[in-house]
Amino acid sequence: MGWRSVIISQHAKMSYSARALVVQTRDGISQIPIDDIDIVLIETTQAVLTAALISKLADHQVKVIFTDSSSEPVCETVGYYPTNRTRQKIISQCNWSEEKMATLWTKIVVHKINNQIKVLEAMNLSTTPLNNSLDKLEFNDITNQEAVVARKYFPILFDKGFSRRSGSTINAALNYGYSIILACINQEIVSNGYLTNLGIHHCSDENQFNLGSDLMEPFRPIVDYWVANQKFNELTPDVKYGLVRLLNLEINFNNRNMLLRNVLTEYVRGCLEYLVSEKKMIKMEMEFINEVPNNAINDNV
Image (cartoon, rainbow, N blue to C red):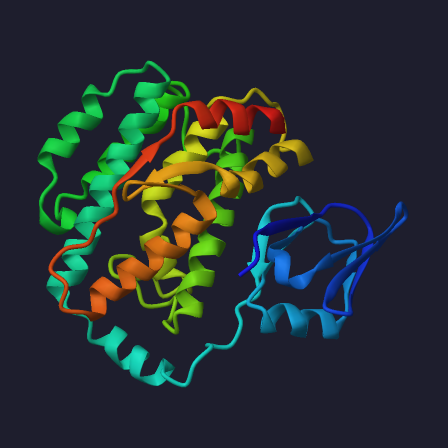
């Protein structure tokens, strides 16, 4: 898997040649080895891709994300499943233990709320309402504290009148960042041979990424923290670059300092192994590294 995120923001022709992505713009021609690429984000509707390039990117499991005329991510490439074990994996996915799914969902919610609390602490804001909800959390979150916390958390983090349903610039930035993380999670699910449609908690018929929507939850607060630390009035290209570059943010995961992109790979693999194995426990401890966000994030905007 590669490590570079390629963002196409202007009129361009993209093609394949000699194991490289060739990008031709009015400013010249650039070549990037496909082996180095993890994600291609095309945030303009004025880009042209050749079929050969799309085929090679899919062969190398490079995720390609397309945006609409307002630069919001609208679709992504999903490659064929990589191994002939997929049938067995899908059968196993359809028969995942209810107890294991409930246990994993409980841990996901715990870590999401804990990370939301860390964000508020880092911003010197009150965490009391979230701590109270965390104390009420039950197995499989049957009282839906995850949603209860969300209703308390965002008005504390931004302002009392903030709503996730509004068309504000903050929401546009949050959605953009979430889309990038969701795309990476989906990429890992597919590369491990499982279906993104079948979730452990999310179960919408209209959501083809139910499992990705489940697994991404603990990582949403990273986007929240970044957005809350910026001042912008519109979703400019610099803001988007900053959100994409969050994948290079260093965090401590299971007692190791790792880039977020690598954490997502290990985290998804660990969750899937837990669901299909006899393991009784799953470890997913994560900590923000205090010094890194300010240094790594602020230079993007």
